[in-house]
Image (cartoon, rainbow, N blue to C red; front, side):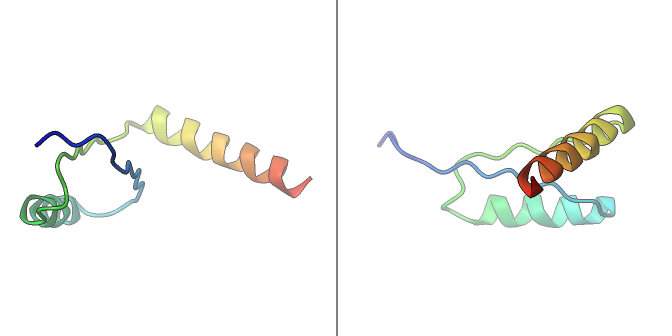
Length: 62
């Protein structure tokens, strides 16, 4: 049966590599999770994300 609706979630965190393995194991065991993708950000992507988040935060405050 094909699903026509779904929810997408972006989770961004810092942690040890073992946390990723634990999360992926939990996703594999959860029948509600159809697909997942785990990526690692390089230092440039982390800096960009932090700057973007700070910019959005200042825009919300004004």
